[in-house]
Image 1 (cartoon, helix red, strand yellow):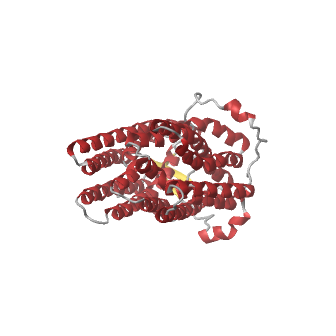
Image 2: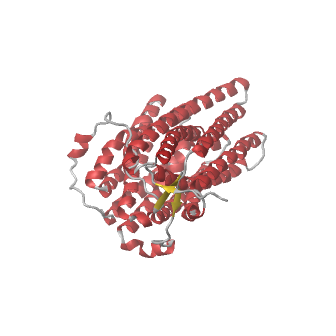
Image 3: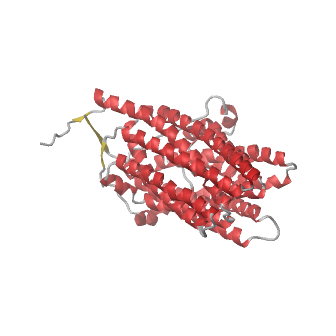
Length: 476
């Protein structure tokens, strides 16, 4: 006869041991996942450029990475109702591992002059991000069932500090490998071949590390989950009422801002690698610097969110986001090549790091404040869809601008100016419709100066992590 497992509480010694072991494994898995991303996904755009992708193709590449995950996530909650979350995560990670084979193959075929490899690569990247959209929400829910509520901030701070550090190191090491491959290619008279070989090595490392990560995920404990179908509302119902509530207006603002931001988003890599002629190391240093400044500003911005509300934080950070592309345009007024590199390493990175750290934190926390727990999964999925569609359309418009070009200035700089103008209009007209949904203090600008202490802490992660489930069951 089949043995029926007895339900027990989370405090049961056997369950507590399983959970603690799984949380330790998850820290190690996060490290490996970050290394895989740092040696793989971070180099999708440079890889496409190495295969002679046009600026328009880079824009399309970004566009599909925004749209595909948003569409897939509409069905994610239904999948979690029907299948084990652990199984969904394992299938998703395995799918990404298998996709590395044709991705690497595109570089080989391009070297042997097989046509349309850039378009083939773009399609594969869309599939890659679509698979990610299936596995990540399931993982998010799974971890929510394991991490105790009173330990979430501390645990995820530790996990993300470890993952973030190794991710940054991996991206820089990857850039060193690519520059070395390019130099060897110059020596042997085959720059393209050896550069593509360097990318192939990085992608192989990403795949192998993911296999290791998959093994750790397989060992982690998953409690059962019960999903209740109450409080469901369709996307059509959401659209009918979005102008009548604060969350709906906030979602519209976020979608509009995503649209104008994505106009320029695909072309930072093109500008650095192709127009400015940066090495892969300098390209990655500028890219990483913005992330580092985001981590530095997070402790201060988290306090602003707690004390003065997320709408106030969005107001502050949005104007920094408006300014960022104009600061990139300002690079044309900097003298020497070295000064341009140092300028981009610090000036736009500091302002952009401040803006995006505050905006992303405020967006996540506003959802928790504005949408009740049972409805939150659907609300987040619909908001992500609108943001994804906005970014898809914005990247598409940027690609069109890159294709047509202008005669009076560099086409990429013109795209940056158009994005900045769009950001200004959305921020100027859109902020007035946002409303705080909880009681907060009156804002004081002196608080920013008094509380900015970057060395007190570098990372503040995960204010709240919500279960998609109503109830979690643990079994011996």
